[in-house]
Each structure stands twice: as structure tokens, then as C-alpha cells.
Length: 354
Ligand SMILES: Cc1cc2nc3c(=O)[nH]c(=O)nc-3n(C[C@H](O)[C@H](O)[C@H](O)COP(=O)(O)O)c2cc1C
Image 1 (cartoon, rainbow, N blue to C red):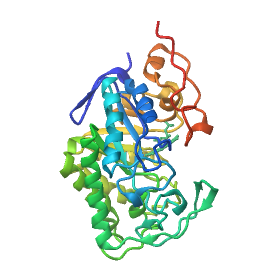
Image 2: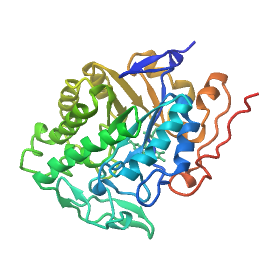
Image 3: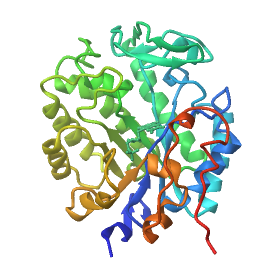
Image 4: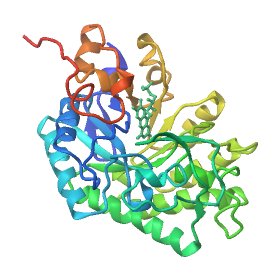
């Protein structure tokens, strides 16, 4: 029997198997960012995946970039998330809320406050964003000043506390996919000269401060961190010293004894192996577009401890059962990924359980 079905401990949680649900934005929260009742149903349906990492959730108002994404910075958000965590726990699962501050990857049309997006530096990404009026160029962001950086770190801390208050088993800090934390890591988005840019130590500083603050607030064993080395999404270019940057970042994060590091794997296989050797606790490795028969390969080689899956989990609420039984998988419907109602969200068929 595959190692995939062996239990594994992440922080204080013992997972029944090595699959997890990767974070996926679905744009179905209420207009004020409160999780909708439909979201509780969606996550509870997928509870057999064991560890559910939620969609990106803004830790403050400026952290929002897309329409109808959830927040975790008001009392209403906490109440909404509690219905989600209760439903997941009742169905036997565990849930980490992904804290996502989008930084410059935003558009004023997509936020209730319509403010100019914030970023490490006022550098416009060559990228477009979906809005209610269709695809639009992302406008020039404004640079956060150093007081605002401190406030943002604190907003991550408070958001993590609120997630736990709402019943989450932990949070995952989103340091991937070209959002605020990866913008700080990347020379093409970060031209700061105040100790939060320039050198490698400067560029990783914001990421490390956020991780320290969150771990201090809710405990390192409830804190995960996601990275995407070499990812170019949202017009990110980490430059020629990418490997050194991640070596330094992972070394600093390793000191914090976090529950896990989650790598969204990109082009650099050697770097992934190096990260494995530097990382002392659970390593989650998400490889996009792998064939089904290779799902446990990284577990077998010891490269990964847990394998989060995205689109298969989106389209197959009973993915665990289907893989166990060798059953066919539902195909994900791209047209319903972002926004809308229950169609393509809570209505994917499950196997007959008789
Ligand atoms: C609809 C959709 C939304 C996503 N939203 C997020 C997100 O909010 N946060 C994040 O870190 N990754 C996000 N991702 C990336 C996934 O977590 C995952 O890395 C990617 O889908 C590749 O894995 P897969 O081949 O198993 O789907 C999203 C992917 C999809 C398909």
C-alpha cells in the first residue's frame, strides 16, 4: 500500500493520510468579505482530504485584490469563518486559513474602498487583472512607508489570532504567486533602500517578520508558510540570486520551527531538493499538472511529507475515496473557478456510497 495513506503529524494535528487540499481562491464570499454559508458547505464536502488550506484571505483592507475574496479582519469575518471551521471539524477535517495580502496585484475596481494598491515600491506590474468591467491593466501602486510596513506585519498577526478565534487549526502565510511577500523578495518589484530591500537580507526581512509575528501570536505549530521559487505569476522576476534568496529565507524560517513549509513547485528541481535539506519540519510539495500515477512519487523519495492538490480537490469532493478505489475523476470546469453560485462549486458529483 502506498505511503500516501500513512498518517503524518503536522504541528499538533495528526493527518490520516498524506493528501491535503491546496489553497484555491473561488470568489464566493459576501461583498464585505464575510465567508458565505455556501463556503462552509464547499469545505465540509472536502473534509476527507484531512488538511484543507483555504483560499487566500485578506488580513486587512488593502490586502484584497480580487472580487468577493474573504477577509479575516472584522468581527463579521470571524463569525463567518466559524461556520466554515465548525462544518469542517464536524465532518472530521482540519483547516488552515491562508493569509493573502496581494500587494500590487490588485485593482481599485475590485475593492470596496477603491484605494490605490500598496506595494514595496511604486513599480507597475506588466499584468492585467479581472474586474467587473473585464480585464484591465493593473495601475501603478504606491510604496508602503516603514510605519505602514510595521502596521501590515501587525495586521498579519491580528488576522492569525482572529483565524484561531474563528476555530481554524492554523494559518498559512501566502508568500507565493507574486503577492505582497513575494513582491518584497523580488528585485523587479522591490527597489527599497530602507532595510526592506536591496540586499538578500533586506528583501527577505518582511517575510521573516510576518512569520515571526504570526508564530509568536498563535504558536509556530499552527503556522505554515507557502513559497513559489521561480514563479513568474503577477510579473515577478526574482533575479539572478533567486537560489541564494530562498536559501536565506528558508534558513531563517527554519529557526522558527513552523508547522510546515509549503512549496508550490516551479522550474528549479535542485532548489527544491536544497529546501528539503534545509527544512526541519513538514514539507508540503504541490506540483501542478502531474499525472495521477505520480501523485505519491515525492513521498516515496522523501522529498515531500504531504502533497496538497488543487484542481483535483476542487472537482472531486471525495477525491480520497476515488483514489483509494481507483475510480475515475471528475474534470474541473474552468468556467466556474472564480465567482458564481453553487454550480461548479458545491455540485460536483460524488461516488455512490452504497
Ligand atoms: C481556481 C484556483 C485558485 C487558486 N487560488 C490560490 C490561492 O488563493 N492561493 C494560492 O496559494 N494558490 C492558489 N492557487 C494555486 C493552487 O494552490 C495550486 O498550486 C495549483 O492549482 C497547482 O496545483 P494543482 O495542479 O494540484 O491544481 C489556485 C489555483 C486554482 C486552480
